[in-house]
Amino acid sequence: MAKISFKAKTETVYEMDGTPAYTRVKVPTLDRKHCDIPAFRQHPKFGGFANSDMFPNILARIKRDRLGEYIRLDRVPEGVAVDTTGFLAIVSLDA
Image (tube, rainbow, N blue to C red; front, side, top):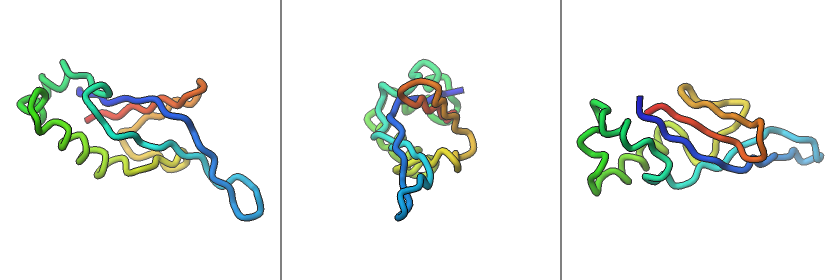
């Protein structure tokens, strides 16, 4: 299974009265450094694109369709795992 993972700092969004509303993580622009390239080469759908110039566009589409600009930690999308035990949150996604 091809895996995409990145680290990001968590942000707390507050209500107007100052109480915390939810916590979120900003999704960076996905690049080859975030991917397990050997697994992508073996993937039936993405195997032919792993070393091509179209790969960044495929990663941008994965970000747009499955992640968005931010991931709310109270509404984590299906297939996405978020580990917040350390200083930075580690987000993993199976493509």
